[in-house]
Amino acid sequence: MSSTLPGFNLIDHPADLGIEARGATMAQAFEQAAIGLMSVILDLTSVEARLSRDVTLEASDLEHLLVKWLAEVLYLYDGEKFVSREFSVSELRQDSLRATVLGETFVGEKHVTRLDVKAVTYHQLIVEETNTGCRVRLFLDI
Figure 1 (cartoon, one colour):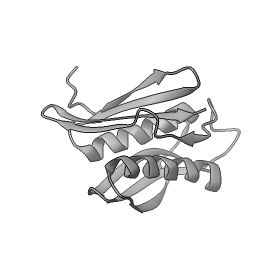
Figure 2 (cartoon, rainbow, N blue to C red; figure 1 turned 120 degrees about the vertical axis):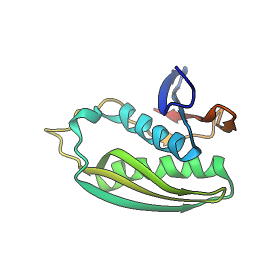
Figure 3 (cartoon, rainbow, N blue to C red; figure 1 turned 180 degrees about the vertical axis):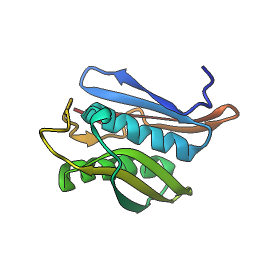
C-alpha cells in the first residue's frame, strides 16, 4: 500500500496508544489522525454525520497545531458530548487550521464506546512531509 493513500494505524505502547496517520497532503493526515482518535474512543459505524462544528485554531507550528487539533476533537466529545466521524480540514498553514467536524450528539444507547482517552500528548510526536506524502504520529494518554 502506498504511503500517499489516506489512512491511519494504531500503535501499542505500555501506557499509551499511538496513532500514525498519513495522507497525500498534510490536511489529509490531520483528518486521518482525527478519525484514528475517534475510532479509539468509539465504534464509528454507530455515528451519523448529521451535525457540524467549525473549528479554527492557531499554534506556533504544525506539531503544536496537530496536538491542539486532536485536543479540540477530544473536547467536543468529552466537553460537548459531540461524537464525530468525518473531518474536513479546509485550511492548514504552519500556524493555523480551519476545519469542519461532522457527527452528532452522543446517545448512550446508540454509540458503542471503547476506550477513555484522557489526553493527546507530545510523546514521540512526528509531523513530516516527504516525496511520497505526509505522515503524523502521536500518542494518547489512556
